[in-house]
Length: 121
Image (cartoon, rainbow, N blue to C red):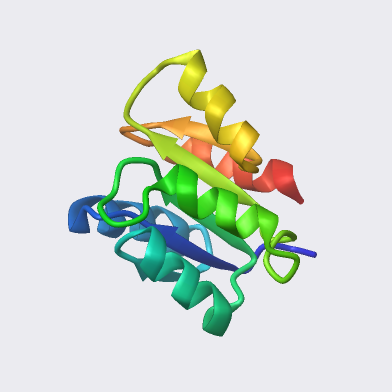
């Protein structure tokens, strides 16, 4: 299935705007959530094709939300790309262990993110 609708999850309004702009310019429909719990609530009603998830957020962090999505049979099919501010192999490894399909480093480069999304198809 082709990715058409993406849910961007980040507690930073600036980062949500930046990622939304990149994705909309590339032709995707975008919705946003402000933290992991907001993401889990919105996934139920929006049924996105992909989630782009920040790691460090209040309430429910990105690792916790990704794990919840990947363990739930109703949402396990939705791929997650994690966005981390740290260039550490441990963050990438931990993201993949929680069920993420890939990881990008902040500040996110448009070409890299779009290539990773295309690679999921």
